[in-house]
Amino acid sequence: MVYDVIVIGAGVVGCATAMELGRLDVKAAVLERDDDVCTGASKANSAIVHAGFDPVPGTLMAKYNVLGSRKMRALCRELDVPFNMCGSLVLCFDREDMPRLQALLDRGVTNGVEGLRIVEGEELRALEPNVSPEAVAALWAPTSAILCPFELTAAMAENAARNGVAFFFNSGVTGIERREDRWVLTTPAGVFEARAVVNAAGICSDELHNAVGGAPLTIRGRRGEYCLLDRKVGSLVRTTIFQLPGRLGKGVLVSPTVHGNIIVGPTADDVDDKRATETTAKGISSLLSAARRSVPSLPRGKTVTSFAGLRAHLVREEHDFVLGPVDGAPGFFDAVGIESPGLTAAPALGEYLAGLCGNYLNAAPRGDYRPGRDRVVRLREMSFEERAALVAENPAYGQIVCRCEGVTEGEIVDAIRRSPGARSVDGVKRRTRAGMGRCQGGFCLPRVLEILSRELGVPMTELTKDGGAPLLTGSLREEGEA
Image (tube, rainbow, N blue to C red; front, side, top):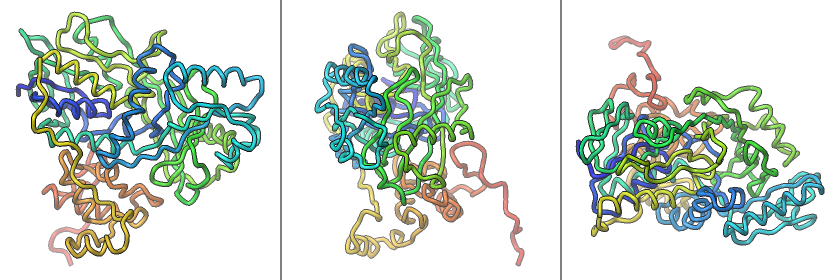
């Protein structure tokens, strides 16, 4: 299979690049080793659109953080992705640390972040009533926001697909070599060829970079564990609350989510295994303890679920993204070491990387580009009259499958039929929230499996949670039994 451009990796940066390639008159494809978009760090993060005060001025992180933050609101509106500019606070607990807080403000101003200021006393408590009484001041960043990273990544992929970009899953790159004027990529799905390649492979992007040349790079996974709290306590905080950053990053945050939960995390532990996304009792305990320093009333016993993600942390002195052409590898473009603020930077990174490909290929803009994506139905956000009209048109929207989140059969069918659509239980969950509620799929899982089986035309025993081993091995009731 021959393409003009191939993007390796269907995370948020890969899908942002694919979306921007959809604006160009090129034949483009995305190769992903897992069974869906958004299966790596893009699905396991803080869901924060960072304002841009943290990265060191002059770095690529600083540049693309601010550029991405400025683009995100309009992009989410175009793609119908939940977005809330709730602002953020960085807490200072000791007057002696005020110079560090001021330095953070100065850094943000240098980076071009608007609206930054230090708040204290009554003003701080007015912004966040439940913040710790020990907090003496905070850096207020009104342009910080929250969104749904699952929907953002899926939405960008859908926009790319509607503009001709092909997606191939279970197609991890196992070999890459240069032949004449093109790159030849070997995958389990076959051999692909392209004149230009974008390396957006996340935690494995160093391996691809090293395979084509240039100065060697090493990525070590930095595991971050999180807790998600019940929506019953979702009103406890209004803003994203950080503590002054430390050596391993921005530290443990407490933040609302766009769906009404509270997210707490992450920890920061360097691990050698690039698949080590398990949570630990020690990690969860430590992050909850740290979070209560910011919000002492954070309740115990309200955790709905916990999860972990691996940041693609480059092992080197300079803490920055690696972007652009690779020496000695014409047409090969890197997006390596994309950890925080990678989610925020993604729209700007996608534009930059697609632009590099377009210039390399001398590609013209696509004349029939289609913005946005197909309509997203969210019954829980509709009025009674709107729901009634929709159910009259399609009764599947009147069949509740996930009671915790109020997700209907019609919404699940939509998620499966989209392109690219859900192919697993977690694929449905990320697109619709079926299974994300208090029972974590305890009630809706069997019905979700039935719908997946029917829509995909495969036996239930072949369906997976997230592309791994099948969830079911067979039926206890043999055919023909009473």
